Length: 138
Image 1 (tube, rainbow, N blue to C red):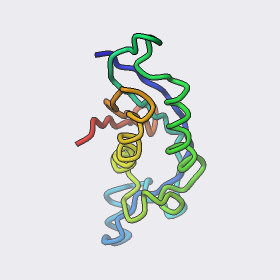
Image 2: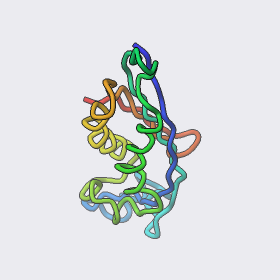
Image 3: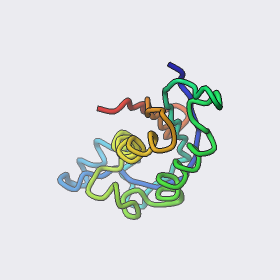
Image 4: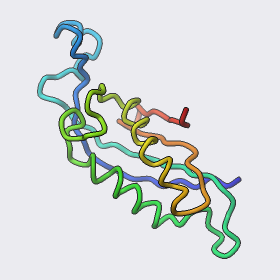
């Protein structure tokens, strides 16, 4: 099995806020991430697929096609957006990096096999250079 990864980048704003909690509780739990006027991140998304190289191309997946798929179905929907207000697939969800990466998985997982025999292996989403989540599906 060969693992191939593609890195994409986007910028987005959000705030962490549980509507069932008081303002004080939100500030206590989420600190400055609960800022009423939002805050932003320069996100890095690493999409890793796995498979066997095609005997005709030597590719597990055509990285240009993978990049186009990620940009079309993820990046265009989140780049320079407010994750709490502008992104339909985040509606009704806390805009945490954990919830965001799971939604990305739900979008990409059925699409990857359409462009190659590869399968989605993992997603790694960096919120900052020191804070990131990794997701391998259910």
